[in-house]
Length: 601
Image 1: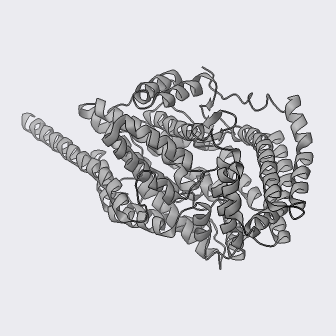
Image 2: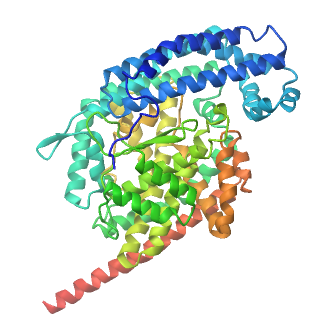
Image 3: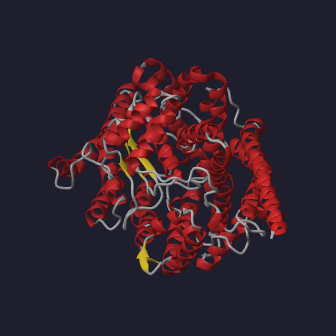
């Protein structure tokens, strides 16, 4: 099994004649699109709308292939000068299209008989949601010249600052154990079975950040300032309101979810305090122990064993999903291991028109890494279910983006826990609670932090110490007394790439949404069994052509009401109560053994 992905189905490399030809053809393709837009007002609306949609499809298919290839090459080697050069050239040329895109969107919004046209033609009917959404969003589109300036300047502004953060965090050297390593590798040691390694890795990680913190602080400040300005220009009350509109999600849904999360935070704090006691701490859990394994399934997996484990647990759920997982491992979809210059974390980038996805991980062999693979393969399955959609109907919004991925996590962990016994069961249960705590407590802290930064950036520049303080405040509010206040993580804003996009803010609450939404869907699966799968696939396909609330409606769920969110969190609370009971029993057994040992001595 190859340990790195192959991009050959896109291009065989920078010297591939097809890649060279497509880069050379790019200006021609852009000009064809621009010519189409320029002619929109010169004919009958129905004919011109069809011409425009087909031109949009052609350009999207052409550009997405180039962009995907270049982005994937850069993600595994952020120092790749050719990738940086091609990315810059691609961005600069595409920035010129923004003015034409704004013109086209305004033109679509101006069509008075749009609903009539949607009913009159199959192509328009397939793009009904896109057309209606375009008409709705037109109120926030600026003048053609201003849209052009924003897009062109973003290449050397927001996008460039984001690239700086990615480069610095992937290339900074971390001194550890007499040698030098990188951030992804040192952060992976948080999952080590050795408590001394976990603490030493945490200390080495924190010691590395001052080398880049000031530079990254400038990146964060300038990106958030840019977003504040653009949101104001577009007539949004805040960047959050702009994000919700982009996410096709209502404020009522967000508030209902956050209110439920806040109600259940104390239950997660109980879990953290119990884990702390089990590990021998009395003042809450130190940050470096958040991912400490609690026994149970502490085996290490090779990539072959990870494949077998995933197939074993997903085949009973859905054969088409299992088949796709086998395909991903066998056909070089996955880049597994950390190395210098490679991005940290994990992601899945897919092309529904290509028939495959590409998955980046920093695999270290722990069960958590296998779960990460399951998560990213969930994204790939989501992409697979969009293959029947037209290319402009394959872009789903942030909240539902985590549905299939988190559903996969729940499936595999629930199966593993059900099979285990004794300490192994407790260890797996704790591992699942560990992950859920991340999407509730940690995600809430990230939401609080980003909210605070956006607000502060309206009037002041936040240097690294102020950003550290804001992060610590957010962590204290979200984690409460579950964590030891002496051992938090003041630099989480440096290493999380989600903060560093000028076009995608608040990429935090969608993880909570995806986790809770997936648990609600999993509850339906437990009730309905195999009969649930057709509705699940239909729901995934609808994510690209529906508002979030309408997607949930396919499963009979009202997201604007607290009942659904409370029900999902109550499922987690039940697992926490089980863990607490098991933990108390273990602590009592330890105390009893200690007493007996004392008497015998």
